[in-house]
Amino acid sequence: MTDQEAAALGAAALAEVKPGHVVGLGTGQAATAFIHALGKAVKEGLRVTGVPTSEASASLARALGIPLLDEPVALDVAVDGADEVDPRLDLIKGYGGALVREKVVAAAARRFIVLVGGEKLVTVLGARGRLPVEVVPFAARFCRHRLTELGYPSTLRSRDGTPVITDNANLILDVAVEAITDPGHTDRTLREIPGVVGTGLFADMAHTVLVWDDGRARTLTKGR
Image 1: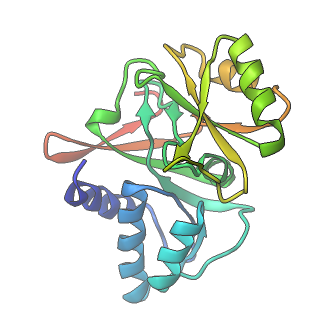
Image 2: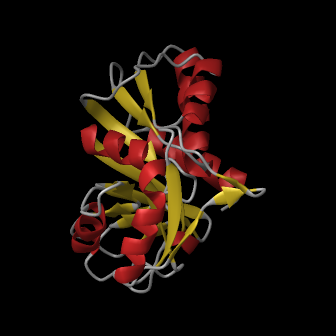
């Protein structure tokens, strides 16, 4: 998805935001485009409050003049991207590293809207072969061992030879996966491992997916 296409999706999602709303602000290309659209609307007089899913999104929102809350309790709407979307609107997220905060914000929202390009649509989750799992540093080696025992080999995410540290001061394991036919069950199984903070599986959470496909935005909703 190009930046222009992301901007078009961000503008489309802005229609779901009403005066007085508390809005979850996602992380990544599509979410950044939405934050820019929301910032422009705030500058023009829209009164809302944002709840960011990452320090990067918080910094951008502050720069654009969007008032922020530090912690999510109850949100009207959350807008974010995804790395994979299946026909049931279940998701894999976390390639950008903000999966745990993204899941908390999505769970706190009455409506969770996902913005993706058509290339993110898959017939079954796991098509890209990778599932992010956030773990506490103390348990990283144990978690990798236990994941391997369960048939999920993993690698520690690093950048330039240094482990990636999340905004929660945790580590990310990129778990090798194949077809995930029951995302909810897989998510629960992995979260039962002591030391796992959360996974990038978002099962039964998205209410609406806006897809940029063939030069236009189309809407996918539950039950379609």
